[in-house]
Image (cartoon, rainbow, N blue to C red; front, side, top):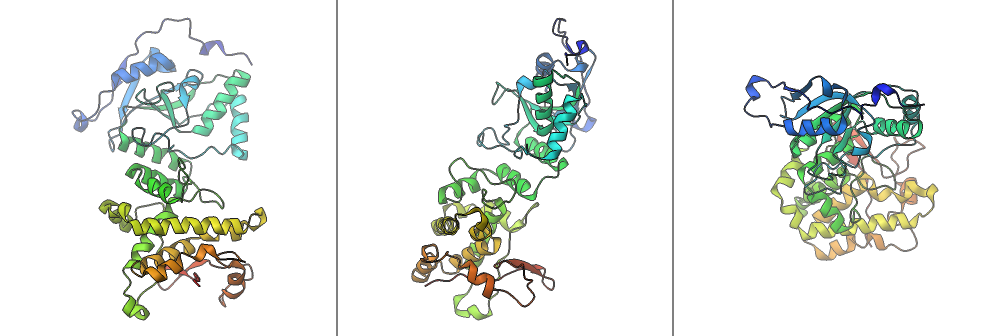
Length: 396
């Protein structure tokens, strides 16, 4: 389909756009001046509104500056979906979720774009401060962007699509925009946790890479799946359980509460925030060793079941119950080197998988478990509304 003539303004002179800043009176002396950035954007991308009037708004909550306009083809060569939340310190880690190109909804989106459907609510940041080759960073609507890009490249379909463009964002404003944009598409709790942790800084990711829970350059999963990268919640729960175990009084063990709690997901966990803010955990060598040994357990359990059909058994070490239980015991034995070393020999089991899953499936059932119960699960006790874990951690 030939490009519509009304969209081709390349031969016309490009006047400086007229800007009108819409700023509440109480923010008049607080907002950032982004006029130069907006003019840069209008010159490079030629939005439909450039010859009329560009309104530049401010988000009262965060102070972020933005405009709303319409364009398509001029945006494509200047845009990228590889967008970090923290370009200064964590540029190699993207904030938004991975593209899901195999979903039928994306196939429908691509066909709609080719049939000249007009999309809206694409959210971008215009910035040349990082990755200047692509000044347009796709924050929200990356699937729509890919569909529009394909329609332009394969069928020369160039429609005007609704675009929201942010200018001059700082890290906190960028985090807010990323979170809101992903919430619109039903952000998973794991992605929310990853965004939150990235905004806090690289320490948790660096810690996981150091102990072997993540490979170098690898990030947390944006959605929990068997055989994939670990998620933020599992690591937070592991660390919190370790310190919870350290608080156990071994002398009065029989009277102690020994059920570790999972970290909250998709929101704020005050226990984790307080521990993180203190910062001592990053230098705790015994905690690091617990992390290394748990990484060994994950690897050993996976190697015991190399076939794809055994993925349920292979991934048992990443079960929340096992992760928190392993860490809790490590914390409880932190001052008992002999018993701790015995605990850490769990990945060295010979002749069977380290967690002995088959035995747990048959012998670890409760009277209330159904026939499909796979062992080592966790459920909520309605009386206390907390996880109850039946984790068996055997040490020779």
